[in-house]
Structure formats: structure tokens, C-alpha cells
Image (cartoon, rainbow, N blue to C red):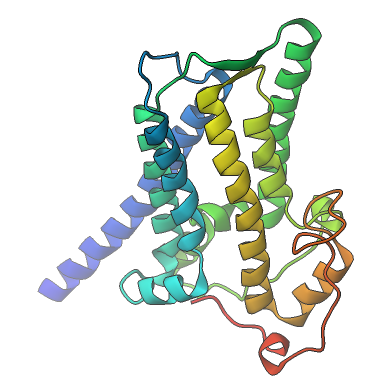
Length: 261
């Protein structure tokens, strides 16, 4: 009897975790839109060091929690079906803290109006459209943890996740990161605090793209290495790890795709 009650309570907690996480995700995305669109009002004695720390607080865990070695350790205490939810909650909490504590600056690099304002605003909205389009292509449910959670709800084992280079992925490897970069660069009002955010997050997006390539090569093996040889990570990348990468002689590890923990 007690075992049955515990099982029902665990099931209820699992349902609540999935629903609550996605409510939190929607709430955070809404506030991210307005934070990037309107920024923060300038404050006297704004702490730009705090702003830099807040920007890093989002960027570092966002890639670290997906690193295979880190993930393999955490899934020992967090069931694999809920790891995506945990990742989403960690991301949302770091962003909400950033929104709350961010300090605006009265130092302004540009403040556009007229045609310049129109171009920047159009680029900002286009970046949001491109972001959700790219997430749709790569599987938004995997990004938020919804898809593994739904398999848990149905009591099914999730299939091995493959990679299909469709849509924008036929031309660049990282349309999600490129779209997100547009969110921070396309602004008609570039203040010093926004420069700090843009600089740190741009570096994160380049490093994160490189790390994602390594993760996908680790999990997918030769199929992703061949894709890397045909498609650049970003447009206009003539060399480096985010350009097209010639296929090297495969090793045993590269030939064998791995399943995510």
C-alpha cells in the first residue's frame, strides 16, 4: 500500500515537473524578449562587473550542463527523462536572475532613429522568427525537455535521436546560435551594459557552437563529421573550427555513434 502511494506521488511529481518547467520556460522567454528589446533604464553607479558576472552565469552552465562527462555524472541522480527539464530550469533561473539584477548604463554607443531604427528593429524581430524556426527544425521539444518527458508520461523508451540536415541546416550548422546572436546585436539603442552583454554572449555563442560540434560528432560519429565537411558552422567562415572541416581518417570512436546518457 505504501509503495503504491509513493509510486503515485512520484508520478504526480513527474507530471508537475513537466508542466511547471514549461510554464517557467514561457514566462522566461516573454521576459527575455522585453529585456533585449527595451534594455534597462540607466542607473547611477551601475555595477558593470555584476552585469558581466550575470551574463557569464547564463553562458557557462548553458554549455557545461550539456557536456557529455558532466551529463553522465548528473544522470546518476537525475533520471534521463527529466534531464532536459532540469537543464531548462537551470537556464530559466539564470536568465531570471539576470533580468532582476541587471544594471543599466548611461554610456551610449549608438541611439538610432529613422531608417536606422527601422533596420535594427526589423533585424531584431527577424532574429526571433529565425530562432523559433531553427528550434523547430532541430526539435524544440528536445531543447526544453518536453519530448523525453512525454515519452516518460506514456511509459515508452525514447528512440535514438538522429540528425536531419533540413531547412537552414543545409546551409549552416548553427542557425540557432546565429539567430540568437541577432537578438543581441540588432538593437537601435546600444548602451555600455548592452555592449557587455553582447560581447560576452557573442563569445559564448562561438564557443558554444564549437562545443556543440564536438558533442554531435561524439554522439553521431561519421555522419556528423561528413556533414561538417560540407556545411560551414556560420556564413563567411573561411577557416577555423566553425568553417567546413575536412574529414580525417576515422577512428573507432568516431565510427561508433553513442547514445546520450
